[in-house]
Structure formats: C-alpha cells, structure tokens
Image (tube, rainbow, N blue to C red):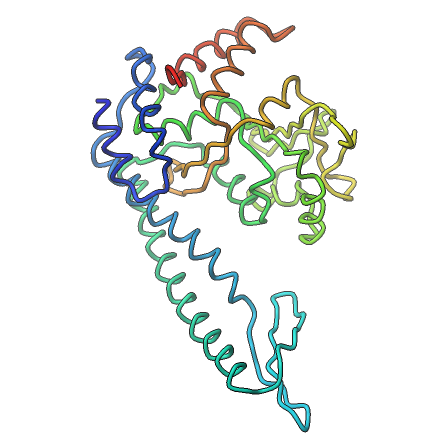
Length: 339
C-alpha cells in the first residue's frame, strides 16, 4: 500500500516537494486500518491527471496577467506613440514609434493571443476533468468549502488566509492517496487563519478590491451573513459557518481589527496559540469536491497540525472532553512518524 501511494505521488505532474516522500510513506504506518481506506486506482489516476490540468491552468493564468489590458498606437503630431492600457483603464506611454516599440507591440500582441488560446484550451480541459472527477469519485471535500476557498482565491486574497483545523485533513489525504474515515472529518464550519504579519499588504489588497471579506463570501453563497454575537463568523442559510481567526496581538498588531471599512464586515478573533499556526510552515495541495470542482487548499504543515491537535487534546483549558477525543483521533490520523 505504501509503495502504491508513493508511486501515485511520484507520477503526478503536480509540484510536490519530493524530499517529503518519506513523510508520505510514514503517514500510513501509524494509521490503524479503521482510520483510512486507499483510493481506487481509477480515482487515484484521475486525481493526478486533473491536478496536472489545474496546476497548469494556475500557472498559465499567472503568466497571462503580464498581458492584461492592451497596446495601441496613439497619434500626437508630429509623433506616434505606443500606449499600454491597463485593466483599470489607466494608460502608460511606452515611447514614440520606432523599431524597438514596434517589436514590443508585436511581441505583446502575439503573446497575448497565445496566452488567451492556451487559457481557453485549459479551461475546457478543466471542465472535462471536473466532470470525470465526479464520475470517478475522485474527491469529497464539502462543496461549500471549495466555493469559499475559490471565492477568496479569485479575489486575490488566498495568500492571506490559511485553513486550520479539521478541513486540513482533506489536503493531507489527497496528497497521500487515501480517504480518511468520514467520522473524523464531519464538521459544519471551516476555520480560516488570517495572517496578521501581512496586515499592510492585506489592507492594500482589500482596498483595491473595494469589497469586504463578507461580500467575497457572498460570491460563494449569497446567503452568508455575519452571525449575531460572533463578529468573526459568517453563517449561511444552511448553517455552515466560516470562522476567521488571528494570532494574539504582537508588536504593532491592531486590536480589534475589522477586515475592511464596511461596518458589516468580519472581525477576526484572537485564538489561543494561534501564533504557532501563523508561523508554521505551509502545506498546499489541490483538493476536489464530490461534485468534481477543484481548488487549492493552503493549510499548515502536517507536523504542526499533529502538535497543535495534541496540545488541544491534552492541555487546552476548558475544552469539552468530546472535542478532546476528536482532537486526539485527528492527531493520530495525521501523525507522520519521525521527521
């Protein structure tokens, strides 16, 4: 079983840190059989194939940003200037017409057309991949989690938030090519840790968007609203919650802090020992919903997850015993042996 999982990861085109392959092997050794089942070969191949397409689409989309907007020649006698237009309607004059500016114009037009054609082809391929994901049961992340993460990524805020808590297990199991038993994953909320270290850049990004975080969540589900009495939580009409956490104030961290100037926006709440999660190494992997949709999950390294869950199980004050048992089980499931 261990060799099958490593083979699946090694054959994937997705960018994996192969120095961690021993870690992926070790993940299976401490698990009791009741805690996981292997993916079928068909589903495993589909995860690899669809992840490759998703990853290439992300790479191509990032490259395509270089060619956003357009270029045109503007006549201003006695000269003719090459002008670059930006998506926000700003314009930048590059220079008067010359062999150099003509080359710049021709290269831009050609590369933009090639980029758009490649994006169109990859988007078609992704649609087909997501259809096959559903048919082959390649994923089972809750659809609302995928929708929320997609909305945040599409808004350009993905690097500011990290999935912590139970849902991180979906990223780990996908990387290992297994399915963790449903009982260890059932939850009606997702915890997102806001990185207070990047506060200045976050404020700049959110101001450019001219949107609140709550409004971004509404792009995933228009029924999301701030929960009464819990300003850090958004809840939708089906009772699914998104909780926003932050580390306890350090240095010049503002407190309290609202994500935007919108009075209805959310306020991330301080969480005990959240600085450990904030400073933890990151782990990123594509995840797939039962409907086949895909997104990138940014979470914490499995080692940190294990350490934090064990702390919650054994030392966190005032934690109900039923939650301690769940924390302990999740730590055991994600235990990666020696690292």
